[in-house]
Length: 192
Image 1 (cartoon, rainbow, N blue to C red):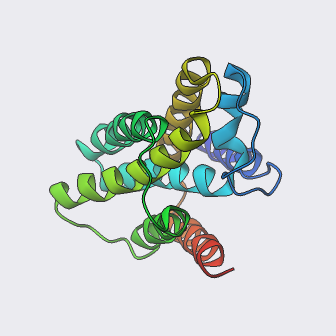
Image 2: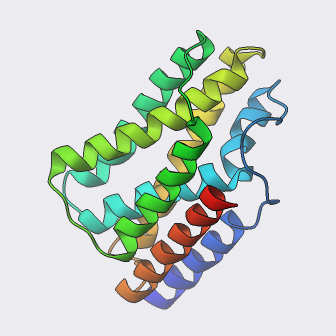
């Protein structure tokens, strides 16, 4: 039975990682809830960081399993609202790419940090992603798009958690390898 869960998890991960290559900013149509839902699934930076947050939370266990995903969703919402109001940060795209690389390294190297730093890092990553989303949403039907985007974000966190949960957890070496791949993708985004 565990083999079935692991196979299902690997298949789900392969499907999640198969959208068309595209960095998420800017240029996506953001005019509907469907577009908002697909946005995190079709931008590699978003897809990888959201999956990685779930994986890292699952690896850490305990309260981190709910604290990190919840922090990401809530702070991303705040960041999106701030971005819609016109707030931007210099080098936001660089920070987003760095967030992908950093979370991948945390998984690959099996880094354990104090809970306050776990939450702080995830909040920083979420703020960057939220600001970028909000900047895009300012010119669109944000109130239709944003809830769908947050729902897809939550589902990606759950997918990451499932990949590290007891019932269908990938072996620790595969989790670390996945973190390494995420870190490499982040470094490619950062330096390409």
